[in-house]
Length: 320
Image: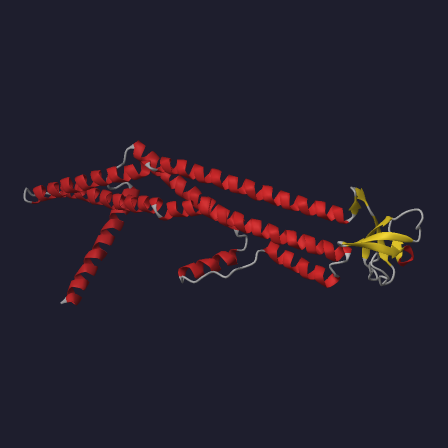
């Protein structure tokens, strides 16, 4: 019994689809009448379509800026769908900082190059953390509201416009039946169906128009989100500039004394410190040096990372 009912329903649905295709083809060819909406409604609909198009583009572009690797976005999307926690993935800046720190430890924290690598690596790690915070802020203040708008209000508008189009097709079909009605028996039924279709169509027009008019208020909301996004960018770049400037000052201090640039020298061969006032040197490393006094021409004060001590000048080749 249920099987027969399902077959009948499928036949009716198929007949409806065929009728719709014939009706819409006739409208495109100009052989059948089509109920037109007023100019104000059409303007609202066009504004809605434009808003949807550009909101989707801005969302996609911003996601590309915040997460340059498309593979990461796909992976995160899959983890979100299966309700599994996303992996704690390092950013490219953090990977760079990590490798610089390892290299600095390998070359020796006491060497000029090794010490500098450590400082730059720590800075890159800090920049990576700042970048992560910016991405999080931009997601919450800009991307999330846009996604919610597209998945909520805009989807509702699209659905209601689809219902309106269906009601419009029903109305035009009823008008066509009234025109074709030949007998007095069929005429009243067709006119009653037309009145019902007209009422449902008018009601759906009002519902859809109210939703379309809300697009302007959505623009105001998106403007606030845009301002928040710019504020997040401003904070991000200010923190980056401050962090890199601090790093630059530290690097300058490693090669200066009282604001004066120090001479660079290459270690000709290894030297082991012979007292607490001296420091050890490794062959071929580069150190910063300064003159101690005219009374000690054979010794200089060497800066090896954060270590400072006397070394014999004979072990060094002063660089130009």
